[in-house]
Image 1 (cartoon, chains in turn red, green):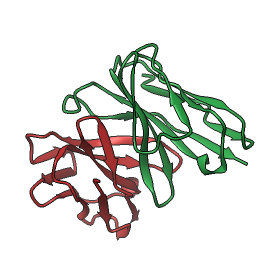
Image 2 (spheres, helix red, strand yellow):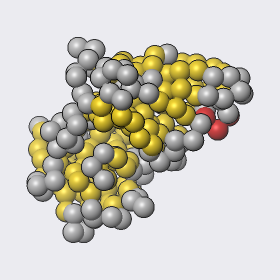
Image 3 (cartoon, rainbow over the protein chains, first blue to last red):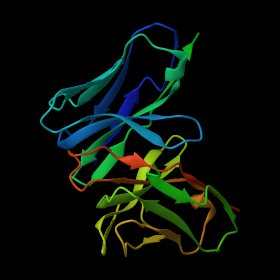
Image 4 (cartoon, rainbow over the protein chains, first blue to last red):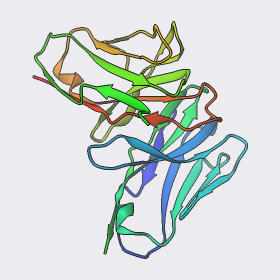
Length: 111
Length: 114
């Protein structure tokens, strides 16, 4: 059974820092990997989708990488801002149609 | 831009009552799914559908029913609510091929079963 782990569970940084969020999965047979952002009381917003043939994706200050062989993905946030404060979740598509989520990293960026 | 719309946003039920959570999307997505989110458990897949008339079970299907009569709608039915079903429920949709588009989520439905 696929298990997705995110470390750290919580992270507090001052504004302007570059930071890395980690995601590891036990079964390397994932089809693709997505990173999401969730604000309190809200739904999830997709940030980046790394397709099965790709190793990384970039959007603005965000960069996500995927290494299937080691079972790891990282989300890099450059020059963090208070507006980046949220919970970040990674999820791997298993068996083409089922997405398995990690439990998330709660990020707080202080001004 | 409606995207994925869920109703109701909040609901309180008594044990044994039944109800339906509604989900509608206007993006013509073939794939739709329901998740529940619980503290410390992350999001877990309840049921999913790859098109009208086709549904399948996810990780935690017991106590829930779904149907997909149209591309747009994917309701989730609780047949006899139990306190263990207290949770936040999310509906999500995307194109059939997971590589062609990300998953879009609704705002969630918070359910409390007393």
